[in-house]
Figure 1: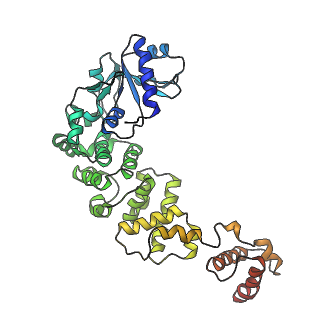
Figure 2: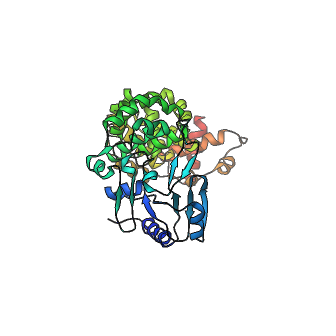
Figure 3: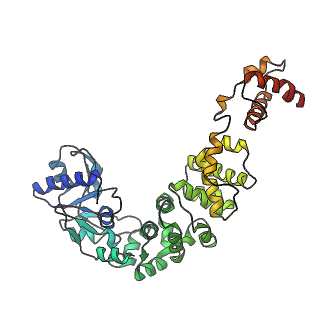
Length: 394
């Protein structure tokens, strides 16, 4: 399988650490995705060397999480996070350990991780270190907690939602005891910051198996503690597919129109996301009445295509294919407002009326007239339209 440049960079970093007398391995999600032959994104290295020792080996480093043992190594051209093996202390708030302890033993580090599929390591020689059955669970397509699942989830309650996210991404199911533990501890999700919850849902929205993920969200009882009517609206997600998280947020808002503000507040949506969502919802409403030329003109292609998808996912009959949207939009006589052949100065020179709000009204009317083919986008033709039609009708 082809791996990203960072993978080879990480192996060079490991080589330098080993030549200095320490051990180091690639860990976590990169190993899981390597075995699944999925795109490998973040490549992290774990080592028995202390942070100060890592900084002594490499010439260019940044302390990105030194209190947790993480140093960013820049020597090989691509940034690689190198973290010292550690164990976590007591979790008193279901979110983070009160302290961490650096250790020299890889097994101690791996056993603190969330799921078996994320608790494997990869050596420079290509050997997989699998102490908790991660490869077997990958073969069985199972999400299983490392050790006692209740302990894992009471350490960090977000792990419950991460289990759902992996179901949505991989199509895996949750192992029976792990599932029961989530059902028992589902209310602990209330201890998790809304921003962290939002990040996990954002990853679910662009996953391959969103419907299955939401089914599992409901089965685990976690949906009861989140904003949005997931159980009631589940069937509307059956064929949902999005490449961008904001499309998921927009669809959630469409299905829960009365809770738009609650959704935006709870999931900490940005102003840009809220603006996009409002545009899509307005375009969806307009589509049900048939889009006008002005709808095509004022909305970006992506907004129109997303609104179209929403209608399709809602089983609303559509009289044209999605490909037609681009064709219609590209064939509009105007693509931007500054392409209109006239402006306010033209209007002022064609009338004795004083400057005022009427200018914007007239320019909007001219834009609509051009878009609908009532008049050509030509200065003289628009002057004739303005004097004979707009002023007289006004």
